[in-house]
Length: 116
Image (cartoon, rainbow, N blue to C red):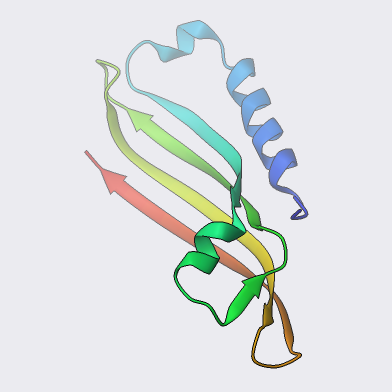
């Protein structure tokens, strides 16, 4: 299974910041924080059905998390937002035509700005 690194700490920090905001601060235009995360497991049977050469050793697994800042209109609708997201995947496979074994991981990071 993948190591989570600082992902849980980021999500907990964002949740605590949101919980600390007073309810009256949400009247009129205001800022908000958003955060989420998850764990994904892709069964090796899905990987192996598309080809026959490589056999997965276990499942492809990983985690994803994101954190962002949102600006809201007076009516509560989002105006614009800035968000950072990251995905980490790990997996391994063996080559059925040789004795080679492959193990690897991927980190995908991104940033998005949206305007409503």
